[in-house]
Image: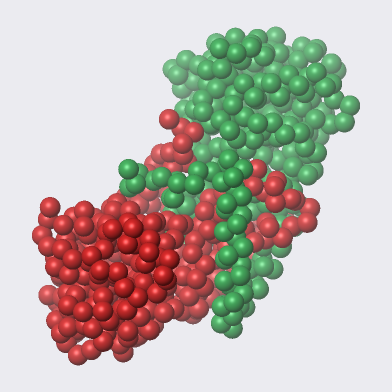
Length: 306
Length: 306
């Protein structure tokens, strides 16, 4: 067991990420007491059954009372509201953070909600699966993944160091980043890829000439990977696109421009152009593997390979 | 060991799919003798070392001599040429097939190449990984995946049944399909998804405001799945887009139209529209899992989950 980084934490909104944080923090011995607030009565009942929290309540302020760290883990669109509710219970010297996939508007909302004497350090663990809910998190989710923290200038450096130690105890690497830059980076590496995946799955569902049964049966040629991404939580992703509108539209504009150039190359039979791009993208894949963010095993070692 | 379906097979072009067929057919006892022709001297040397073929040659006609089944497993753009070369060695009563990802132009090319008395049955196993070359194939690649066969009307039904038994021995399910319809189905489930993946990886590489290091480090948010698809064999995929131009442009047109509608919904803050699509696409994912083409394990059971 490692150091107890925060004796008492409160998780507000306990889905995939909230439940993974609790399980990872308990496994690492980084916390002693865990309070959970969740607005969904079915979730609360399930969390009681799973038994990973010491207190389960509908009241964010009750959960936050006495906590050294309050983590808002709701969908991004209601982080501000949840932070406001939790703030009523927070003590001076505590840290208020979140796990939302968009950071600039969230930092603004957290700062507006936080009482005096509370450290505001927004955060985003770059990890997840397509599953949702309080059953979905597992202790290893953050292992070897990056968590980005976005402290504003002038933030207490000891508070930042402490939150960094917490995430490292959960297995993550930590990077500090400006919140606006975060939103642009994530638009590229996460938001636009999700939008594209949702879109192609939707396009496939609407075809008249190809049945949905055919789409599903013959999905192993590439499509099934998109269906996994397009099975992610609808509410969270709606919020991401609405909150990170500018960066998403910027990257989407470039994507569409590039796609039109590819479409033209196909129409005019320009094989060289296609081959050049397809060769260049292989190098990026190698970079992702070397950055430790993926295994080199083909097909993610899907179960047909022993 | 099962029935010997074809005592002697010849594989012309021995990369990922060719080597997987040989290993799977040997594991199943579906063949006795395997001849390989490959134009690449490095591949031939490697195949000699790996020892899974009885004859390794640069000469397709030599490999095809005496074969009961000749499988053209080259990139799609040179299937016709490879079939012509193999045809010079083929005996009457043998079957000529292929594994190309595009079927209509390939069927035409195989028919033009085949000598009298040879059964032409084009085929396409919907399976693969992002790896290439004679080392890449493994015996389980086709397990529980679909192979589509596209016999033209009037094709000998016994020959079709025999090739079906061969693929079933390798672990695949077999579906018969019109070759033009195949090309439309695969444009949706494979070709356009690959094009989109190549495109977004290219877009990300070209950004000035986000470094490639950042793209790689923070790729776990969705992007890394696209990099895997975008690491597929460049030559094969160039050929696919050039050969299946009409269907790819048709599906791409619909994709772009749908994407523009999504883009507009984001710009105007229409959260309901986004949520509706994102909910609908979850159902497709369930369909893919129920069709046995994917595991329900989140994240494909990547290695961070024990």
